[in-house]
Amino acid sequence: MNGFSEILAAHSLSLRRGKTEVLQVNVGKLCNLTCAHCHVNAGPKRKEIMDRATIDRIVDWFSDSEIPTIDLTGGAPEMIPDFAYFISRVKALRPSRHVIDRCNLTILLEPAYHRLAQFLARHKVEIIASMPCYTAENVNAQRGEGVFDDSIRALRVLNSLGYGSDLPLHLVYNPVGAFLPGRQSQLEMDYKRELKKHFGIVFNKLYTITNLPIARFASYLRHNNKLEEYMQLLIDNFNAATISGLMCRNTISVSWTGEVFDCDFNQMLKINWQSGNRALHVWELDPSTVEDREILTGDHCFACTAGAGSSCGGAIL
Image: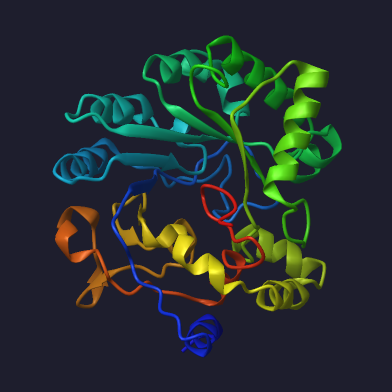
């Protein structure tokens, strides 16, 4: 039993899956950025990308399910060769399904992807975009020099296509360091005020997400001798009220190879669902067996239950 499981037991809590509302697909680790907080260790030299055969098997399974939303993440999901094919296949399904693209914004300005924003708008894809601050200093510190200016340019492109008004555009805040996010509602007001005032940018919602002490962010913490301190911060701020709203309760996570996990963080730690002694692939999964399944946990789960909680949709409380 890990420390997180012990805390759940001490509070007489269990963590089991509810009805699946989202299929989150991590299509690979290739990315044009190398962000300091990245739990995927994504970057320009990564080779892990989903191929078309895997996309087809996932979409075929998805089409037979009643899951209403598919959430594409990475890496920069847009960089896989069959990104547009993936979205086009999903959008052709009946009944229609909702598609989310988790975008780093800067990819929209790359020459090879200059028509991507128009494609996303045409297919009414919801965009959830990484924007860790409304100041250049903090964004560039976390994501690389010049990323803030490129992000602003990309947001202006999206606004010109109706994102932030007619089409959903949400931004994601990650702390630039070893601390918990501030209050989401207040940060959203700050973001909206500053981005509108200085750049004329509008968006719908801000999601605050706690940094997970895994992969590249864990390396940053170790390098600065803050890993134990940060873990203790997460443990000390455990909030039992967040359990019912955790994303692992309503989201199935799928890797670039089609393997199944409870969440994207478990995926990076290779805590996968198994069939016997081998990894279970999503196309082998009977959707009727998912609900009430026990969720696999580890001490990294304290990040999602600290303070107001954290999920792919922002704060839980």
